Length: 128
Image (cartoon, rainbow, N blue to C red; front, side, top):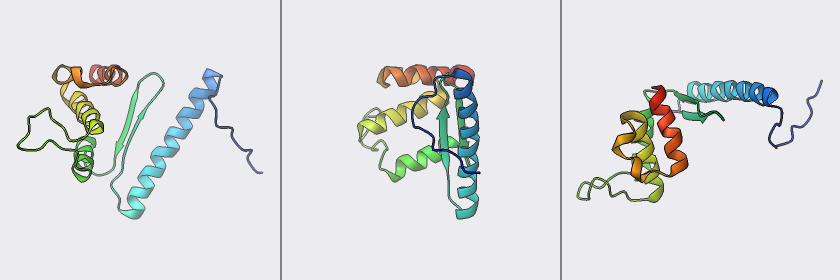
């Protein structure tokens, strides 16, 4: 039996939406683990639910280590001669701030984060 094509639009029924989210999240996590094992790849996956709940997967090591590796590979780091808060790229500022807030608390860098990211980061810190 063939499955019908799924329309890419928001699911209006909240129960159906939650069930779909759970199933697709599980499938995505499974695929991330599979590609990691089959291809010996390092995979990092971050998912935020509609309620702001964090789901993460880091296949080798920790998520913080994987994000730091990503930042180094994209030259997203603070220059040694520069001031600590001077970052090379605006995207890197959000990544640096998110990582700092996620692992050390919002008091260190909340003034540099976009408001919509700040509220999510605060929820993460409160739950940890």
